[in-house]
Amino acid sequence: MLVNATKRSLETNIFGVTHPSPIFIAPIGVQGIFHGDAELAPASAAGKLGIPFIMSTASSRSIEEVAAANGNGHRWYQLYWSRYFLGSLEWN
Image (cartoon, rainbow, N blue to C red; front, side, top):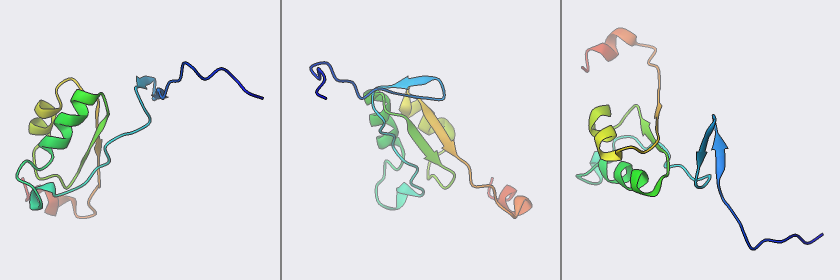
């Protein structure tokens, strides 16, 4: 059966938040090895486009830097919990 498709929407609702599309920027760790802006550029672009940005545990930049670059955009954090908790504290 054909339906009227003149008004289309890619909006999706995830965890009670409506996003303009079902596209998110996936977490990619250590982006600083291939570009000086590291996670800041994609976080900024995501914020401007209204696309959620997911930050990796292995990010090159701090949560605060990425949040500032993302502005008021939606962001998530991908947490990889280390089996060696005490060892991971030494990285701080």
